[in-house]
Image 1 (tube, rainbow, N blue to C red):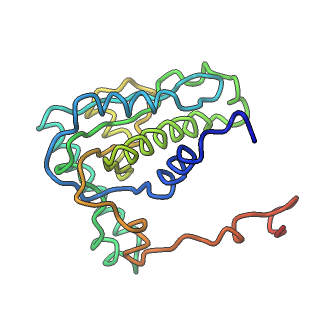
Image 2: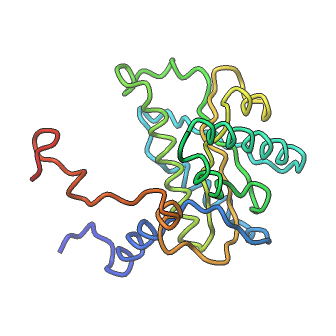
Length: 216
């Protein structure tokens, strides 16, 4: 037996959270419990980061007027996205793509400014700071799901506009509007799969051996 492994119950819990994590768009009224948001943020802050640069920053939106302006901007980008989708525009407009006004908490997540100063692990792949922040967000998501709280990553915005709305410094980069809150239920499958937008590929289509396209 591997002495470093968790118990079978703990392992099952980890895999369950991964399997049942959802990008939530539908929320019910009600605040988070005291301490929950801090726990989720702590989980995010324990995420792996290239060169230990910890590039993520979280801006909690508590001003209702600012929340409304963020929602308005996201809706404007939603319409532009529909226009860019051509034949699938109508299908897209029927989808619910955010829950900014309904959720308990809204966070704007961004990458720090002056990122060029961090070279460790980024000399040939500077985008690794974004990969690091995505890992932090996944930690947040899984912690929230384990506690029965929904979270949704909204990426429909113009970075410059959102940066100005929340007073982020020049050179920083917003990457997410994160909606967090209570839910009536979690989707039985990813919402875009339930809505027939797309479906999860079989593992055999994404796993190769030794060279791209060569199946094991």
